[in-house]
Length: 495
Image (cartoon, rainbow, N blue to C red):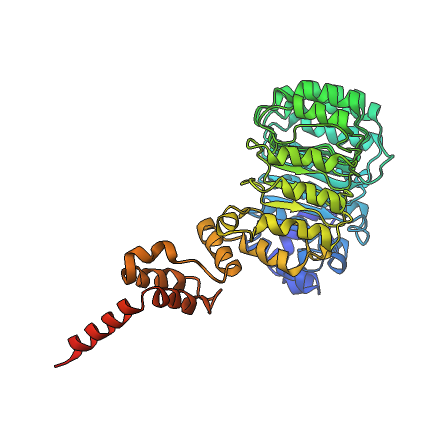
């Protein structure tokens, strides 16, 4: 770069410099051209070797990064930037990286900033112009699995003090032991200004009692909070106690993820009783939930208990909720919970009259063919036509291919995916009962036969032999009527 003033340098050469002269990378060329022409809305800066087509720009030199910043600051549509990878700026000088973020700061339309799996310690101070100049505009600020030391975490959370338009905040550390409860207790009060946030994710941050107490003070100010993710922390009974105290004021919250913490039956019960009624989705995966005693699970629409080793009575606890007419559960994830064949049979029985549960994942839960077949009579009871009609026509999923669910069960589950449940029931009846008793209809003689045949025709693909069976029953029951109809038809056809 010949000029000591980089701004003059890029402006002076812009008119005579082709993107092909800036970089040999075709992907980088396309992005620079799009920025220059005003057609770029979101910019993903990451290694093309790792992210492939998801990478918009992979800076191979300080010169390339300089041109990227130049065109980005002039873009009339660019409103989102994503930066991924610890070594993304490895080929660029410290000065060029700083200048790049200065240029991004001059683009005052940035609304979304994503930093993913990056050493945030290296660039946190360089983000100052971006945040300072776009603080009122940014709606999404997400730092996912980034390496953060304590000073970096404090710097990041200080950004939130002046960002009143934020709708989504995501912070997760790259190292489980990098931050602790006391560190986060100091940082969390900065979130008080984010009153409009709708999604909040705080993972791998070592959250414990002190930081949860700080959150309980912040939560009542977040009137628009819809989703909360506190996974991979150190949240236990005392933490849950203070959390629900603040969350009870979040009357629009509908989803809570508290997976990979220290949540057992006591903590789960406290959440069930203490969360606002608006919460209908709970993730409590890979915790210590055993369901060793009766807990009312029916308040949720979606419940994820994946990775919890259930007690022998756990399936019975689940079954009691599923059998309750007031049960709201539509999705239940019991992946890798040790349900077993007996537990599967217990749960299956509870679904006989359940009209809500659509998906229940039971993969890797020690269920053999015996356990899977416990669902057969629930999904399609062949005891009688009425029993088949009253079977469960709602459940559509029990697990993926890894579950080794018998083909017969998979076929019925697929059939249940039909939106017209009357048709689903009729199809099951015709598939299961190959001989339908037409005797109750004989009083109407042959007048009803065309309608019977027409009705059966809607399902001919499932039972090709049934039509002949229906006709035979009518003919066998009233042979003289058939002969008379035939003779009458012959006379009418004579000239």
